[in-house]
Each structure stands twice: as C-alpha cells, then as structure tokens.
Amino acid sequence: MVLLEVFMKKCVVLGVFLMCSCKSITYQDVNPEIKPNENLLPALESVVDLRNLEATYTAGTYIGMANNVGTGFGGSGWLQTTSMSGTAFRDVRVNDVINIFNKEVKENITQPYGEKKGYITVKLGYRGVDKNPFYELTSLFTLWSVNFLGFPCGRQTQSLEVEVEIWNKQKEMVSRYVENVQDSEYCAMYWGYGGPNLGRKLAADNIKQALKKIRYRINIDAPQIKKKLK
Image (cartoon, rainbow, N blue to C red; front, side, top):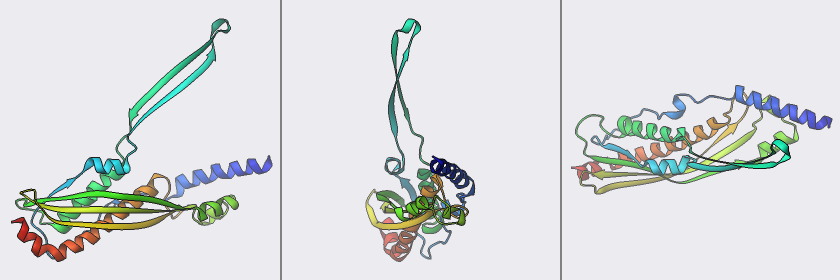
C-alpha cells in the first residue's frame, strides 16, 4: 500500500514537471531555413492536397454513446442513453506542412514575382511512428527518479514519404521528386519535448528535411524544368 502511494505521488509529480519543464515549439521549429537555390524556377502556384494532409495527421470525426443507469422516484429503475458525435479540429501539423511548403516554394525554389508558369504540388505518403521502450521501462523501474536528473522519459521516431510534382500551365507534369526521411526526438524534463509538442516537432522536422533534399534536386534540374515550363 505504501509503495503504491509513493508510486502514485511520483506519477503526479512527474506529470506536473513534464507539463511545466518541457521545451516549447519555436518559430525555427516550424519554419524552413531561408536559403534560395542558385537556379530559381519562374514563379509557380503552390498546391496542397488538403484531404491528403488531414488523412495523415487528423483524427477526423467521432461517434460515441453513453448509458446512464439509475433508480427513479418510488424505486423504479431507468435507463438513459446519450449519443454524441462531432468533428475533430484540424491538426496543427496540417498548417505547419502548408506553411513550410509555401515558404520553401516562394523563398527557396522559385522567383517570388512575375507571371506564374505552372504549379508545384506536395503530397504525403507513408508515415510511420515508432517508440523505443528502453527509456520508458528504465523510468518505470526507477520510479522516474532518473528523469528528475534529465534522463529521457521516452524516444519517438517518425518516418515520412514526401512527394513533390511540378506541372506546366497545360497541366502536364514536367518533374517529380520523392524523398523518404526519418527523424527522432526525446521526451525529457528540462531539455526535451513533451505531449503534443513532441509529435509536432518531429512532423515539422520531417517535412523540412524532405523538402530541403528536394530543393537541392530541383536546383540541379532547373535548366531542363525551365524549358518545359515555357
């Protein structure tokens, strides 16, 4: 009983510290580096598939049902059923992807001014999430004592496939790029990310990493792409 009480107290204290002591998302976390290509493409209209992004990051709709059983006046029983439904709000990671992609296109890949010569699109493919149980088990076996010294509470790895296509004004695809990336982050007191911030940071890192690689590939192919956009 005493051990259980100590265990519960440590859980509460750890939860409070994790909420108050984890790193927050910064502007740099959810914005790309501004480093324009040497061979900028002419202005292009950036296009995102919103349904694709929301299918990747959003919970969507939910339907729930609750039964309440009780005793009414005079001892008679009653049963009340309450149904609930609604729509989950758009995940903030959807907006992060759109923001990062638009800035990559306007700041690093294309000329920001002039007549748009075509379109550039982004689409997310496979997304995987893996957690390393070593840190969680170590924290549990030490009753989270090591976490107060800075030992990670967990480690999460995310994989992501990113596809970018360039189309001319006649809706003909002139170039296509696919990159698979992977990144990891720690959940830790004082120095790591926690809660929703961990997943958001990883998602932003993945899309930035993939678009950076694609940006370099576009820079190499720029002369051929320009010819096909005329």
